[in-house]
View 1 (cartoon, rainbow, N blue to C red):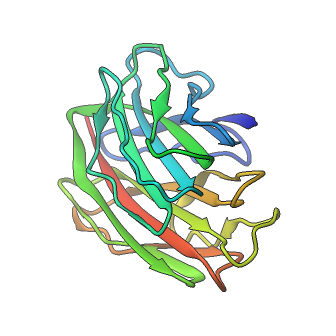
View 2 (view 1 turned 135 degrees about the vertical axis):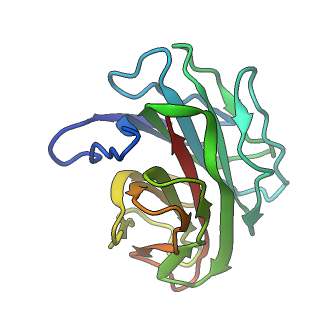
Length: 235
């Protein structure tokens, strides 16, 4: 079963984040599913060939059989993905060619999967300003994605948080309190482990260390989480 949602710029959606280099988050989309092996993201509303795409894929593998993410042709895996317990977070990017492949995160059995896609404009030909960095832990409500160091001023920081609510596998869970970041997308899988995942963005005015970025999980008593940051360089 899957659910797809797309957001374009406007009231109640992702802020049009632009800085000195004009980097802009055009729009975003989210797909949630369970009980399937692969996930096919959707292009965000209004996205066109030439946009810079960042794909964040959260997965909870209930069979705990291990992960081996694929990287479709034309895409780059931001870093060798890590996880905690049965969870995995993988981030991919590319310049859009208008098509969307299927992504396989490996493992076997049934999964919770959430894919958030960001379409970004005015990105440098050397796109990564700060390399992907993540932290993992358990039973924590306020989850801090680690500080990264941006290469220049006014780059776009992308923050991610995902939780597997082991002690309360039911609907109605989410993140809140994103601090100086603006929520792009969040969702919860409607079956299996009922994982929930959020992505937020911010144009960071200064170069260098960004500091951590935190969000608050509505459930954390018995849980495992991943929090991560990556920064995109403006043109």
